[in-house]
Image (tube, rainbow, N blue to C red; front, side):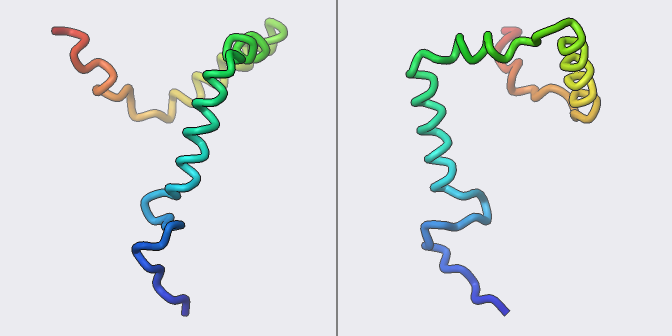
Length: 79
């Protein structure tokens, strides 16, 4: 049987891996500040009508599994 993890351990992963979160946040911030976002967005555009249709179908499939939009996104929008 494995030994319980010390709650003060820096690599706790019960509620998330804090170190991985910090690395992700830093990488995301660095990317945004690099000025490469617009080019990456252009590169991600569909290359053909068929690819655009495939992407649209994939988006619809993903949305069909969603529970709905987070009401917090609209918070304060209708004041």
